[in-house]
Image (tube, rainbow over all chains, first blue to last red; front, side, top):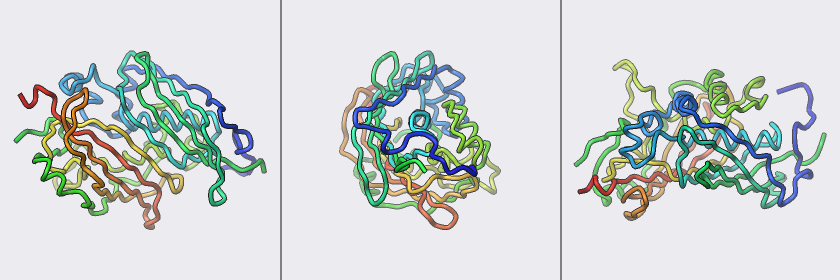
Length: 148
Length: 170
C-alpha cells in the first residue's frame, strides 16, 4: 500500500486483556438506511419499505447485516489501525436499529494468543442503540507482532 | 401455499421438505462484477470508514463480501440468471425472513479486481421455534468466497430466521 513498512496502529504488545476499544457512534438517519441498501445491493424490503417492515413485525425500516459488518470493522480498524486484519467476526442481531436512533460500538479485549505464528487478539463487542443492546458481537484481530 | 412478499425468490414447502435440503450445495456462482472502487468507497461512506487501505490502496472491506452474492434488481431477459441466494430457495413455510447471525472467517483481505465465486451449502435447519417475531425455523448456511484463481478469500456462516407472524397463520 505504501513504500513505508512501518506498522500503522497497534501491535500485539500494545494490547492487554481488559483494554477497551475507542467507542464509535453514528447517527442513523433515513438517508443512512437508504445508503445501506444502495451501497450493499441489499434490497430486502425490510431495509427500504416501511410498510413491509411493519408487516414483518418491525417498527420501521432497519439497518442490515452488511451495515454491522462495515461498522464493526471500521471501529476495529479505527482503534487498532489499518494494519490490523480482522480474521473472524461474529454478529448476532437481537434488536433492530431504526432511523432516528444512534448506533454505538463498544468493545473489550478478552484474550491474546499466538497461533501458528499469528498474533491474535479476541474481543467482545456490542452495537447498541438508545433502546439498549442490539448486536452483541465478537471478533479476532491479527495484529503485527512488533514494530518494524 | 403462500406468496413471496420479499421479492427475493422465496420458495414454499413444509419443514420436512426444507430439511431435505440439509447438505445440499449450490453450483459456484460468479459475482456479476469484479470488486470495483466505486463499490468499496460507497460502502466506506456508509459507515464513515477512513481506512487508507480502501481510499488510497486497492483493498476491499471484508464486510462487502456478502454483497457479491446479490444479483442486479433488473437485467435484460437474455442475461437473467436463476441463481438468487441459495438459502432463500429452500422450500419452507415462512413468508418473512430476518438474519439472526453471521460469522465471517477471513483467509485474506479482499481486493479491488477480485472476481469472486460464491458457493453456498445448507448446514442445518432447526425444528420450528417461536420467537418474539413469530414462529419459524433457523436456517444455517455456509458460504465460501473464492477468487478467480480458486483461492479462498473467506467464509460466512449465516443463520437466517424464516417465519410467519401469528396473524399469518390465522
